Amino acid sequence: MVAMVRRTAGRSRLVVVLLALAALCLALAACGGSGSGGGGAANEVDMGVAEFQQSSITIHAGQTVHFVDPANGGGVHIICIGKNEQCAPETGAPAKLNVTTGIQVSPGDPPIDVTFANAGTYTVVCTIHPGMEVTINVQ
Ligand SMILES: [Cu+2]
Image 1 (cartoon, rainbow, N blue to C red):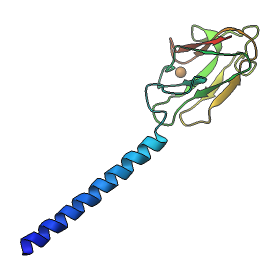
Image 2: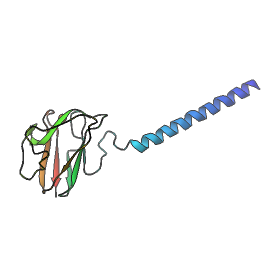
Image 3: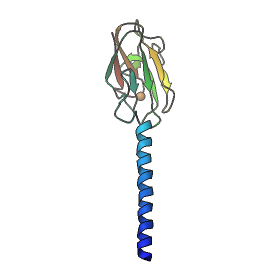
């Protein structure tokens, strides 16, 4: 009899644990949209420790690209229009990134929103990390 009560208590504790796990899974699914692997929206560029998660994206003129440096998995970057880790302003590129010193961003900072008004192909680089660049095709 005592053993039976004990087993029942153990089972209900197991149920509580399972329910807690289920709730945790739901919570993670709800807020875990942008995990590693760059599963962002079409007009989003995600940053890792030393790279952009996308090598290129295609948008339409007038659309805004969100450059996201996530609190988890991001890094400190200085981004701008350029090539070979150097800022190199280009005609038609958005003024916000068309700078000579770049914009510094740290993990968890608000996204840098950049509107590309003019069609063209632009390269956004990081001046800290060699090879960290993403091509923005604006149609
Ligand atoms: Cu960088």
